[in-house]
Image 1 (tube, rainbow over the protein chains, first blue to last red):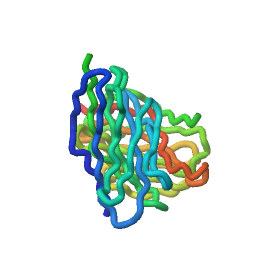
Image 2 (tube, rainbow over the protein chains, first blue to last red):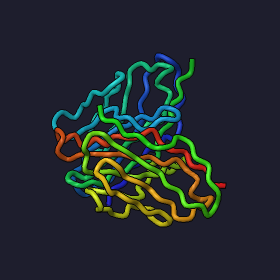
Image 3 (tube, chains in turn purple, orange):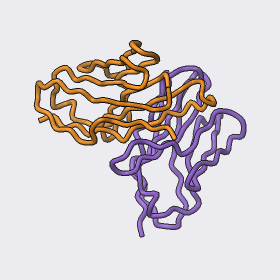
Image 4 (cartoon, rainbow over the protein chains, first blue to last red):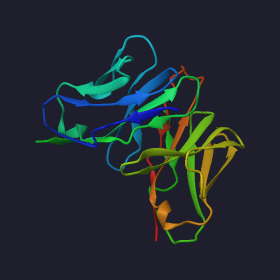
Length: 113
Length: 115
């Protein structure tokens, strides 16, 4: 079985500071990895994904993530956050070749002025 | 752009009522999903459909049923709504064949309150 852990439920950070949102997963088979963002009262929107190839993945809005197979991690980073990045962020994995997506419990990023 | 729409953004129903949540996608995706989202629990899969009239139970199917009569439409049914079904419901669609993207596309969600 697969699982996804987002240890930080809330992350406050000042505007223009860097941020890292942590995601660790557990799986006995190869997986594809995703980060989604949810703005207030909206559905989820894809930020970035890792399917194969380069372990550093760049997404929308200046976010990037690095896949680390040995540490089973897929942490999300942004070098300088804006107020508009305030949202909830979800890490998700899917075992390759299946329909099942496993989501983490989410990290609420609050950017402070 | 893929568009996934849900029939209501906010819904208030009474205990015991039968509730229908509708989801429509416009990209000819074969796979559609219903999740519920609760604080601290993330997204949990209720049901999944991989073709018209085909469905599979997810992790929390109890108290729910689904219907998929047309490829673009996937309905979630609460047979007899209970207060513990108060939640945000998210619909998503996905296709294996479209660039192998594996991405799920989400609707805006329906916030259901059962009183």
